[in-house]
Every structure is written in C-alpha cells, then in structure tokens.
Length: 462
Image (tube, rainbow, N blue to C red; front, side):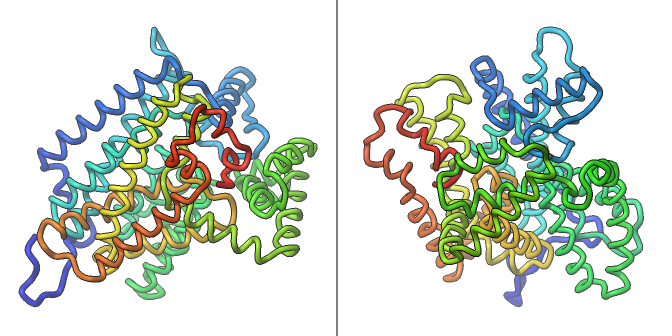
C-alpha cells in the first residue's frame, strides 16, 4: 500500500466490519494449508514418543476422572475449567485407531492454523495484504507456535480466542448488539482458559470511552460484560460455594506470588504447597508468604521482576524445557542442540521483524490497544512467575508487528525509530543469552541433558 501524498500514515479499515480481504487472498489459503500440514506432520511424528509432563499430565488425568466420576477436580491447583472441558469433549468424540490425546492435538492443529486468519486481517488493516501474508506466515511456521499444537496445554486455544477478540472487539460500535454478545462470550471462554485476560477488558472499556464517549462506552461495556459474566458465572458460583471470595476463578496467582518472592530454592515452595491440606488454605498461605517475601527484601524482588521481564521476551525456553525433560521422547545432545537452535532462530527472526513494526502499530488506534495490553501483561507476569509459555499467546501480536515491519522494510519505509527498536530487540536477546542455561550451551559445555535439569531452571528461575 503506497503512502498517502500528505505523508501521514493511515490504517486500512472500513469501519465497523474491518477489512476482510483474507477470504479472497489465494496466497493466504495456500499458507493456511501448508501451515496446517506442518502442524499435523509434526504432531503425528512426535505423538508416539510424547511423554506427558506436569500440567499436561494433570489435564489429561483430571479430564479422564471427570468422565468416569461426573465431577471435575483440577488437581493440586484450582484451575479454570475450559481446557479440562476441551479434553473431556475430545475423549467423548474419540473413536477408532486415533488415540484420544492425538485427536486433541489434531484439533489444536486446526485451531493453531486458524489463528493466522485474524492475524492476517489485523496486519492487513494496518499495512495491506503483503503485511497480512507475512504475519500469517510467522504464525503458521514459527517453530514455537507449531510445537505448542503438539503439547496438551491451553495456549493454542487461548491464542485463537484472543486473536479473534483483538480482531473484532476494537471495531464494535454502541449501536450493535449481536457482535458484542458473541465477543463477550468468547472473552469469557478465554478467561476460563487464562483468567488474566480479564485485565484486557478494562483496557477495552477505556478504548471505547475514548472512541465513543462515556455513554457509548457504558452501553458497549454492559452488553459485552454481561455476556462475559454469564459465561464465567457457573465456575465462579461453584468456587464461591466451595471456598468463598478468596478463590474466584483460580488459586494459581497466590502460588506464583509465593514462588516469585521465596528466598530459597523453588522446590521448597512446591513441596510446601503440596503439604497444605486444601485449595483455600493453599491460597491463604501462599498469599501471605508471597507478600511476606516481598516485604522482607523488596530490592531483591524488584531485581527478580526485571530479570523475569527480560526472560519473558527473551530467547525461547519453555519448549526447550520440555525437550530437556524428554517431553518429546528421549533424545541425544546433538538432536537437542539442533532443535534448540531451530527454535531460537525462529523466535529471533520474529522478534527482530516485530520491532521494525511497533511504531506503525502504535500509530493505529486499534493495534495500539494490543501493544498497551502487551505492556500490562508483561508487568503482571514479571511480578509473578514469568516463563516464555506465558508469552506464546502474545506471539500473535509479534506476528502482526513483524508483518507490518517487514513490509515497511521491503517498501523502504523504515525510519530511525524503527532501527532503534530493532537495536532494543537485539539488546534484549543479548541480555537473554546471559542466562546460565544459554551460556552453558553456547560455551560448548553441554555433554549430557542432565546438566540442564536444574531446579531453578525447571521452575523458571532462569
């Protein structure tokens, strides 16, 4: 898309509906098919040797027990129910030679490929179809996003739901009814995967206030909010009856706060948490211990928070952790290093390209909201327990920025501020590479994967 004669950059938007050229783009259709094929092949290849670890083991065990007993229990943490419900549903649909967990992964492959559609539309809105195609390609072929489709964690479904909300919610108008209801329902479902998404609704209401004034924002927020609340209500009521107001949607927040401020080894928190008798006691004790740790050494807590913020956006770790723990089967050091560098180079390309597009995303009122949400989530996550797993759903925003940034580079439209942003991304990656695990790998000192099975790294104190 050529710049306007005035030199002022504008967004591609046709008002309420948004730009929907994705449905007519043949290149995108081929990209979608190729991206889906890559996910399916990777999933079929790794499934026979896949070993369930930690949360994915809990998700599958509790979903199976739910089918057998008719009662949902979420394990040692009180978690939102939707991913358990997803596995419950796939277990009910399971038939023939396809294993239950494999069926779940194949559904995630479809969801993971579908993420490219709203990402394309958002990038297209800012910088045209070329940007949309590049953004979609990053979503479809970035190694980390492919790998998550083959892991039984809720990130892929959550990323799809939030991508659709990002795509459509910023283009609502106070005169509409059906769309706010549908997007409110989708937001509620996203919160039943990851409750932190509730903070985005506050930013969205402020966005509407700025766009439509107080009355318009209140009308939209009421329709949207009531639809969201209706979706959340059964789980909230269940928790209020069981535990009272101290557990609304989950009790993982207090656990993460305790883990983040504990002065000793992280395994100590893990063991102490499990020794407590029930979810309510765990939530109370963890909250008390977490705030006590912060009060006792606020300087150390702030230092860790800064490190966690860098680690959140630094080189990819979570999939590497699963490789280390043989989540994709037993592998040798050579195979590990090959996949390690494939994963890192994929993310480096995404982050550097995204840095080149941040300025233009900030200039567009719709996508600026996504950048603000990214900053807010970074602050929330860095104050608790930050791992690149939490970042994965935000890679859809990075992909949008990358599509816009690379389009600007190809059209010769990069400015000094874009180059400065690229420099900041490179600096962040350099800081990230200072982590002990990465130094060990880069120095050539890795002789066995047992060297990587360090408590502080496994529990994200890296």
